[in-house]
Image (cartoon, rainbow, N blue to C red; front, top):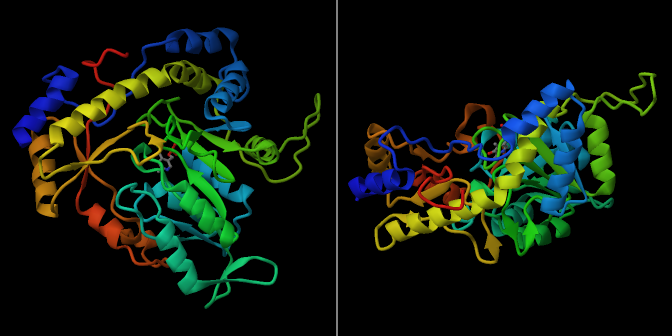
Length: 384
Ligand SMILES: *Cc1c(COP(=O)(O)O)cnc(C)c1O
């Protein structure tokens, strides 16, 4: 099985060299647009490509506002501030995520609460969310959700669309609305993924994207905040040093951030976004081939949830056991085919081990079994 998997992956990329998990592809106007910024001298924090990247991303996702940031973590930090997360608050999230999700909560002086994921979406479970709230929270006279023991505010809920597969957003929206929680979506991995026809990151109050080098499109480093008009305008203000518009005076009306995406990076982003649908078509074909390859085996390939279109950013397979997982990791990595286990659960990191948590049976089950497989745009598929 493992020999045939290695052969299968090598066939997809038609190479005997090392095969990474996810490499960027620059097959469009990248060089032209980046050269443009150099010729214009506008390489830094303002420029036409920043405006265009925000407009294009707003149009693609259907978000009324899209605000570019220096990376996805910064976008999350601001998104949480936009919904009022403050020092001492709690934010409910999933333990099965990249550390940036939790770090952004910590930057606000708040603390994550870990609630279990669904096995089929790999995203935050509405049922587990409800159980934790029923057991631990109440809603005060002002309609604020608080913990029963310490009376701390539970301000927001922050699901993450794991590997590009949308979480159960209808379920989460329903629980959040009943418990007065702001839904913020960490859509860092799910650019191009739609839930019932709507782009991930646009169903909650705010959503965020990442354009790090390993994501489906890259700006080198970068991120985006997706929001409605009012919060979007506020996001732009506080990510650009909170400067009041004026022809020459410097008036900053609050302590803002320099979280701007440089024009140089936005130029790369504009060129990448033009190729996004071609990348996704390619990756969906690759995913279908993986699914075929694993069908009938004791490995379970992760496929998109019902009523969703996933971008299949990172392909994943669920092994039978931790032992089988370790065998797969060793065999593939030794042969120059890069595979990786899913992240260690956030509650297993010493920095977040003290945080509150619910029952994490599914997350722990997945932690022991999920392996990511090479997922770059495939040279053997002809869409790109
Ligand atoms: C990539 C990623 C981020 C943001 O990462 P940056 O490197 O700061 O752009 C946040 N959350 C998740 C789940 C991610 O995968």
